[in-house]
Length: 228
Image (cartoon, rainbow, N blue to C red; front, side):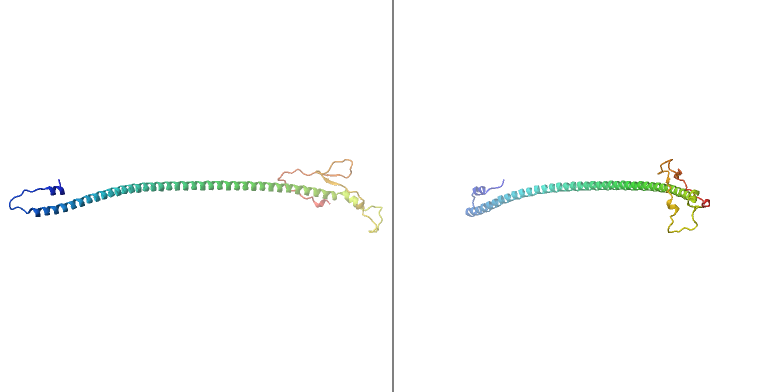
C-alpha cells in the first residue's frame, strides 16, 4: 500500500548515537511530504483526466459504432432502393413493350380491316360496274333492235305507196302553193312493247317485240339493206 503524506509526517525514527541531524531529516521529510502531496494531487488530476478521456473515447466509440451501423443501414437502404428502381424500370420497360406491341397489333388489325373493306368495296364497285356494262349492252341491243324495227317500218311498201304521186295529180305543180302529201297524212304511232297499249280500234299500230336475251347475248346483226 502506498504511503500517504500523513504517514510520512508521522513516521518516527529511533535515536542512536552519532545518528543524522534530526532537523535536517525533518526538513527533508517536509520537502518529501510536500512533493509527494503534489504528486498525489497531480496523479488524481491525471486519473480524472484519464477517466474523462476514457469516457470520451467510449462516447466516440459508441458514436463510431452508431455511424457504422447507420452507414450499413444506409447502404442496405440504397441497395434496396436501387433494386426496387431496377425492378420498376424493368416493369416499365415490359409495360412499354407490351403497350407498343398491343398498339402495333391494333394498328395492324385496323389497317387489315381498312384494306379488307377497301378490297370489298373495290370488288363491289367492280361487280356494279360489270352489271352496269351488262345493262348498257342490253340497252344498246334493244335500242338497236328498236331502231332497226323503226327503219324497217319506214322502208315498208305502205310508206312507198303513201308517198308515191297520184295518177290524177297535175303534171306541173307550183312548189310555193302546194303542200306536201306527207304533211296531210296522220301521224302513225310507232311504240315499243314497254310503252305501247294495245288498242284494236286504232289502225296502223305497229308492235315491236324486244328479244329476251341473256347477259352474255351478242348484239343483233343489222338489217340487210338489200331488202329496200
